[in-house]
Length: 420
Image 1 (cartoon, rainbow, N blue to C red):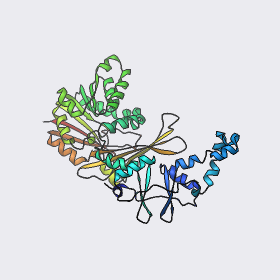
Image 2: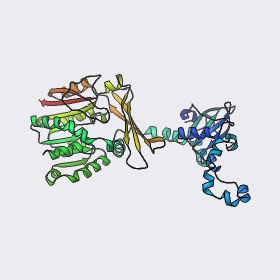
Image 3: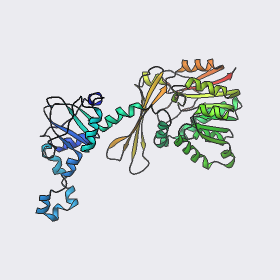
Image 4: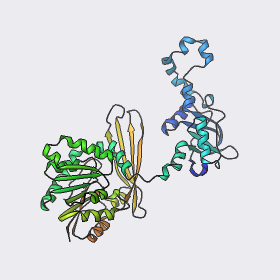
C-alpha cells in the first residue's frame, strides 16, 4: 500500500510571512500537531507545537546575558502575545521531512517514528504539496479498517461510559412502565426476559412490581452497571432479578426455559444486523403459551426522509470540573443491503473549547414496519400491533397509545402475541 492510497488530499498550510497566530489557530482548530509552510504550493518548512513551545524558553545566549529574568518561568509565559505576532519564518523547521505519493505506507510510518513527528507532507516531483499523511491515517488503514464494526460489546461498553449515564431514566420509566404493566397484566405475565437490557433500569423496575426478570446484554460494562444498580432493591425484589453477560441467543440456548414476555427495548433488535430474523425466531420459540413480545425500534424512515439523517443532537452537563459539558450527535448513513450504519459522535468541553471525546460506528439491521410484521407473521404470531412514539433525545413517550406514522413517529413500537 502506498501513501497516495490513504493520504488526505485537502491540506491547510501557512505562508512564511503569516503570523504564528494563524498556525496556532489551525493546530488547535484541527486538533493536529503541525502545519506545513508553503510559498505558493511549494513546501518550504513545517511549524509544529514543539517549535512554538520552544520559543517560550530562552536560548543559551539569552540565559548567559540575563540569568535572572530569562530563568523566570512566569515571565516566560508572558511571551505568548509576542510569540503569536511573530512571522512563521522565525520558528519553522526549514528542512521538513516529506514523502512522495508512491512511498510505501510503512516507510512513511517508519520516518514518523524516527523523526518523532505525527504528520508528513506529501509532495510531487517539483516539491509542491499535494497531501498530508498522519500516524492516524496509517493506523486506520492498516488496523482500523480490518476490524469489525463495533456494534457489539465495544460499542455498548463505550455507551455505558458516556451516553447512558446521561439518560433521564425517571422520565423514561414514567412513560414506558405504565404501558408495559398494563400489557403484562392483560397477558398474565409472570416472567420476563429483557434482551439487550443495558444498565438494567427496565428489568429492575419490573422486579419491583413483582415480576421475575432475566436481563441479558453482550456488554460486560452494561451488566456491571446493572448489577450495581440492583443492590438497592428489597430482598424479595433482589431475588427476582438476574443479569447475564451473554449474547441473547446464547442465553436462550443455554438456559432453555420459557418466558411469558420478551422485550427488546431501545433499538436492541437492530443491533443484530446479521441475525435479527433468527433472533426473533429463537425468542419466539422461548415464549410460553399466550406469551407476548415487545419491540422498540428506531423509525429509520423518518430519520432518513424527514430529519436529514440526524437521530438526535443533545447537550448534557459533564460529570466533573474537567468535562463541563458533553455534546452527543447520532446520525445514520443511507441503508445498503438491508443494513444501516449508525455513527455516534461525542464531543466534550472544558468550558473553554470543544474537542472530540470519541466516535463509534455501529452496523445495524435496517428494519421497517413491513419487514417486522412479515417476520413475526412468519413465526406464527396471529396478532401484531403497531404503535408510534416520540423521542427528542431527552424526553420520552408512552409506548402503545399513539398510531404509528412513517414520517412522524420516532419509535416503531410493536406488540406480537397469540402465537399459533
